[in-house]
Image (cartoon, rainbow, N blue to C red; front, side, top):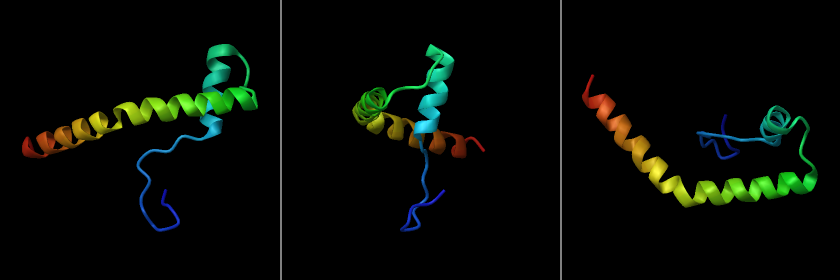
Amino acid sequence: MKTERGDEIIYALVVEDLQGEALERIGRELTEYEIYTTKKCIEWGLSSCLDTIMETAIEIAIAEKSNQ
């Protein structure tokens, strides 16, 4: 998947993903307010550790390449 500028999207999460997870976990879909709150929590969680995730992913990619 790509953005309008043509940039490749590495990971995307859509409301349908949240609703599917909610159905599995609580047996119903989320309300609009619950979706809003869930989005804010996901944004906070990702922003608090995204730099660590990217650093680790890059290190693993480099290590795997050197093992080939």
